[in-house]
Picture 1: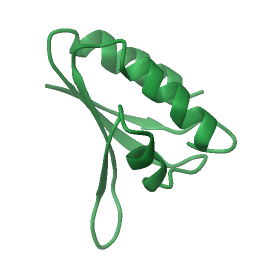
Picture 2: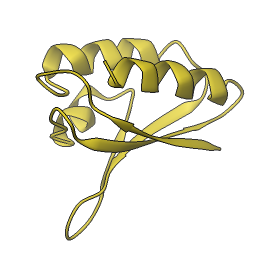
Picture 3: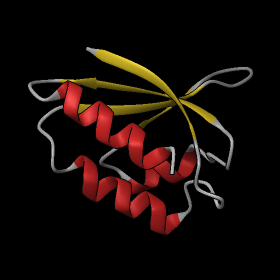
Picture 4: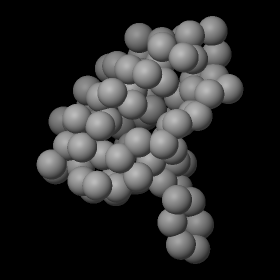
Length: 87
């Protein structure tokens, strides 16, 4: 399992169109990809293949997310997803 921290670089955050593109990108990989937004009182996790769970993160511009990838192509998946999220 690989994990990295990334700051959302899209001006509008992970809005519907950005979330849909993230789902399409995530589906290209065999690895499972999870996004985590740390928060008080609890963290929120989202499956990168689920647009609804991504939207529920409410990740705005400048928000920090932890991205975890686990599977056969985890390094490439983590790299591409973080690159996309950072804008």
